[in-house]
Image (cartoon, rainbow, N blue to C red):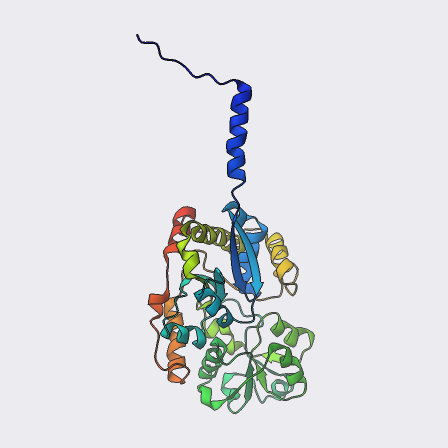
Length: 346
């Protein structure tokens, strides 16, 4: 049998070699990811993922930036100045798609749950309600209804609320003003009805008692299961496949934690809400008394709901023609996350 030399390494040398190897891996810096947010309850999953270290576990260092609208993020995403963005379905977004802007929708971040009402409902001035003048949607005719942004689904919500009472959008006067002006406008009787969202709605109805909810106009009833907030990836971030996949896995893990805690009662509601409150100070302890955004645990986008909003905007002249929304949805990253985590089951 021929002689075969054997390389023997002493314990000290072997330990040193392992330390060098481990150090090489440890020195690999995390991939920095810039994320645009509106800092609303629809962003809850991202906050939970950050606080639970899910992003870090995927080798990502995530930085949140505050924006006042999703539309403001689109140019930055299109030019790779922002990696991940979020926002609702708006005429501005879909008009951008008509201009061939390459910023795909990659996941659902929030949806409208039919069972959640809270402050997401038309609220009529208390004096109009108590006098009996306005008690249901059919009494909205001729009234001044205020939304925060006419170029948003809020206009659709008003139209759908009016339809409950057999009216159209043209039977009411829709006005636009910032949320912070809703309360003084009601107090001065400058407007008749407002469409607030949590927690503003609860403040108007329960603390100040200057408005009363019209239950038949609740957004959860007129628009239940619609996708309310979406996630976008920049073209450059999508090309970094490992980072883009890892981001989606971390987010989906957190979305499921959030869903279990708030909507199934099987998670640690207090801890999850404390994490969210760190970023959204207006969220009450354990999220009690506030209509928190619902989520789709597998991240799927309700495309039909987006097409319904768009159909209205085309009809109302806010878009010259419909965009091909389905062509702007990239489900690959959600599919990867579901494959890795498993399909969600209660």
